[in-house]
Every structure is written in structure tokens, then in C-alpha cells.
Amino acid sequence: MECPHLSSSVCITPDSAKFPNGSPSSWCCSVCRSNKSPWVCLTCSSVHCGRYVNGHAKKHYEDAQVPLANHKKSEKQDKPQHTVCMDCSSYSTYCYRCDDFVVNDTKLGLVQKVREHLQNLENSAFTADRHRKRKLLENSSLNTKLLKVNGSTTGICATGLRNLGNTCFMNAILQSLRSLVEEFRKTLCALWQGSQTAFSPESLFYVVWKIMPNFRGYQQQDAHEFMRYLLDHLHLELQGGFNGVSRSAILQENSALSGSNKCCMKGIYKTNSLETEGKENGASTVVTAIFGGILQNEVNCLICGTESRKFDPFLDLSLDIPSQFRNKRSKNQENGPVCSLRDCLRSFTDLEELDETELYMCHKCKKKQKSTKKFWIQKLPKVLCLHLKRFHWTAYLRNKVDTYVEFPLRGLDMKCYLLEPENSGPESCLYDLAAVVVHHGSGVGSGHYTAYATHEGRWFHFNDSTVTLTDEDTVVKAKAYILFYVERQAKAGSDKL
Image 1: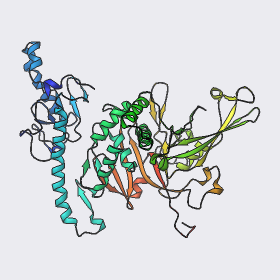
Image 2: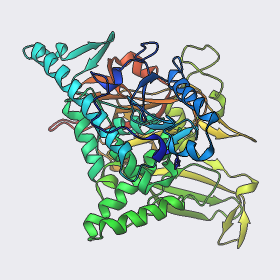
Image 3: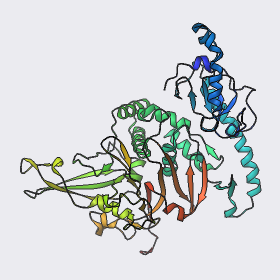
Image 4: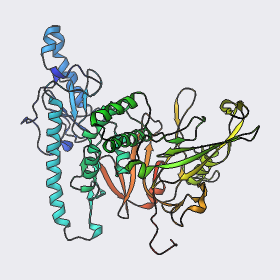
């Protein structure tokens, strides 16, 4: 939100000598000395703990308002009011008078200057600590390239992403994609350099705000929706580079698309509508080259037998969790078989009779008739993105399907879903898992997102700024929300696995 209280509250300078020593994320509350959730007041630079610790940051604001009660209204406006503070870990800004996160800045840009100063302090502390640890590990084996941080094993080669205020939905997707230009390229480069324990993607986040208004603010968002918008806008911007379109024109087009909630290349969902249709916008890009596939949609009139076919490009497939598995929440429950990814894929591609609300306009019968529809995959992508539809609308709210879905780490065979499987190579339909996005919690507007991803044969768990080494047994137990599978490359001179 646009906060009107910045000019009367933001008074400190970025080079203020009043800041404590050490990295901002480990600063301690001046009252209780807790280093959990430190917030710095942008009026006086004092540090206090957040409302979910002991709430001293809010109390600092409330105490500052008491003396003002006896002043006249005009005097109140001139006196600093200690209403705005900044999270020392995520650098998000909050106003207690507005009771909301702040997106604007002062005329002199003081909020951003303070944010950059805190980041520099944090990075300096991380660099010094990283240099010390690397010297101890220079002659170590592969297994010693792992650190113990707060009792957890942390991978040196992997970098976390700081949470900027309910931005775990974005962090989980970025850690999963790692393949795609400018701020996105910078973010991905930083993730694999391994020079920092955690990187703050605020520049990318502000670009997202600029071109995708749907994601402005600090409320929780849907990770799948963000991924779709991100890929669509990358596709548009990369097309601009190929076609000689100016960057400003691309940004305007992106903004218009976001405002109207349209995408340049719609994903294919098995919904209750026959109007699910996507058209590729212009030239292909690295986005469509990596994630792009093609579906064939067949509709048959049950009265005259007329068949209608169309081809739909997709960047991901959204799969329903079959209704018979909706109550099975864990892998170890004994009430019937476990739902598998194959069950979801089969439900997506099986022949389905459309109900009375979806009558098909038959061109031969010249009226709406009962019909069946079926999907075939005409072309598989290099990276197969599978989204499990865990959120669905009831009469009044959006519920979550918390069913455990079993998925393979290796060898997902997609041949049986192909339109022409006989034309595929022996290994062209086999996929290995690269990343999994998980939603923790009960609602799409709440909860938390994390991601599991593999790198150089090892699995890592990305929980915002925390990166820990994990194992395959932990990964397969996750309640997946989005799965990323990479096409297995055929071995030269061999037709066998």
C-alpha cells in the first residue's frame, strides 16, 4: 500500500552510526535481547523484536504515541512518530498506523537507501564468514562441501532467497526454475555462485510489481499462478528482443496483459469448458523451447459422431486429483490405494463425457449436443511441468485438497499419453524429477511455500533464505504442488537405460 506517513517517520540516514554492529539479520532487540525477527525503527534506528516474538517493535511505536496525545494536531504532524520500521532480514517496510506493508518511498528515496545499506552490512558479514569457512574447506572432499549452520546441513553451492514479506511463493518457483531477461538472469546467477548464504531478490520483486500488478503487496500469492505469469512475461520480453520491439513497449504490453488477467500463451487445463484454447504469441523463445509442448483436444458429438480436433500449446499441465483419493492425506493410511501421479495423468487424458452445462455446438447438427472429449499429448516438452490442482472453490471459499500423491524420482514414462507413441525414440518419453514445489498450510492465501531441487546428484531443500541438504526419502514423502521433470537424454550408441 501507499503509506502517507513516511515523511514524518523516516528520519535516519543510511550511514547512521546508531546502527548496531554485525549483520542486521542477527541484531538483537534492545529490550529482550532476542535475535529472532529484528525490526529497525526508521525514525530513531532502535532495534526491537517483531509481534510474533515479544512484540517490542509495536510497543516502541505505541509508547511514542502517548506523549503526542496532549499536543495539538498541527504539532503532531511535525513531530517524528516512530510509525515505520523495516524487517532486518527481508528488508520489507511496515507502518503501524496503516497496519500494513509499505510499497512507496520518500521523495529522497530514504527507505531504499536504508534497505541497500542494511543489505551491504549483511553481505559484508556473510562474505567474511564465507571466506573463513572456505579456507577450512579448501582441501576437503565432496562431502565436506557442506556446512553445519544452526544444526542443519547447508550446501555451499546453493544459495537461499530472502523472504521479502510473504514472498515464499516467488522464492519456491525461482529455486525450482533456475533456468531463465535482466533481473531474472541476475537472480539466477547469484543463486549458483555460492558466494552468499542468502540473496535478496528485491530488484526482481519490484520488477514483478511493475509489470504484474496482480502480485503487488506483501500478501501470500499462489505459486503456480506466479509461475505462469513469470513464464508468459519472459516469453513476451524475449520475443521483444527477437523482433526489435523496444523494452518500454514490451513493459506496456506486459502491464496491459496483467491488468486484464490474460496470458500470452495459455496453459492447458482440463476444466469444465471447451473454450480452453491457447495460441502461441509470435516467435518461439527459450521459454517455449524448454517448457513448450502441444496437446491435441478431441471432441466427439454423441448424436452424429462428428469429431472436432484442435492443437493447443502448453507450458504446464494442470492435473486434477481424482475424487476417490481426496480423503487420503498420507502415504501410510490404510484406507485404500495411494493416489499416484499416473492416476492424475490418466484422469487428465481419459475420455470424458461432458455434462449438461457443457453441451458442444456440433457444426453438423447445427445445435448444442452431448459430447465426449479427450486429450492427447502431441509433443512433449524438454521440461515437463505438472501442476496438481490442490485448491478448489466451494460455495463460499477455496479449499485445499491435502491428498498425498505418489510421484517417481526417475523414469516417469509419458509414452502412453502420446498421440503417436510409435514415432518416439526409446528414451525420449522418460523424465527424471528436477524440482518439487510444496505448499504447507490449508489455504491458497495463507500458508508457506518451499521447494526441493536437485543439483549435481544431491537434493536440497530451499526454505526462503535457508538451504539444507536432504535425501530422496524426504523428497518422495512431500505433498507436491508443482513438479518439474526433465527429459532424459539418450545415451550415445545405446537404446537401453
